Amino acid sequence: MKQLIIVRHAKSSRDLSVPADFDRPLNERGHKDAPVMAQRLLENKVPIDAIVTSTAKRALTTALYFAGVYHIQEKDVIKAPELYEAPSFVFFEVITKLENTFDNVCIFAHNPGVINFVNQLTATRIDHMPTCAVFALKADIIYWKDFERSSKIFWFFDYPERK
Image (cartoon, rainbow, N blue to C red; front, side, top):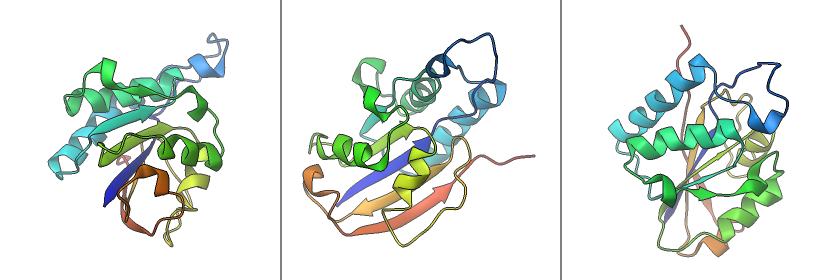
C-alpha cells in the first residue's frame, strides 16, 4: 500500500511588480498557512517519505515549509518542473517514475491541475481546492508504476481554517 498526498500551493502574492506568474512568491497568509498545515499533518501522524514539487516559486516555497517540518533536507526535495500548470496526465507520469522505496509521497502543484487530478482518483469529489489544501489517498500498489490503474481509497481532505 502506497499513500499519496496532493497539496495545492499556499496563497501567493498578486504583486503586479513580479513579471512572471512562475515567479510569484507566497503572500503573508501563504507563509502562515504552509507551516501550519505541515504541522497539522505531522501531529496527525501522516507520514511523508518524499516531497515532489513544481519548481514555480509559490509551490516550491510551500513544499520547503513541509520539508522543514518533516526534517527532509532541501537537497532531497524532488523538483518536477513539469508540474507547473500540469494537466492530469502529467501528474500520472511523475508518479509512475517515483522510486518504490517511497511509500508516502507528498506532491505540490497548482490549480486547476490539482483539482482535476484529485477528482479522477477516487469516488470522493472536491468542488473547491483552496490554497494549501491537502487531498490524500491510499493506493493498493507495491510499485508506483502501477498507480494510474490501481484501486485507490480516499484518505482525507483538509485545508487551512479561515477566520
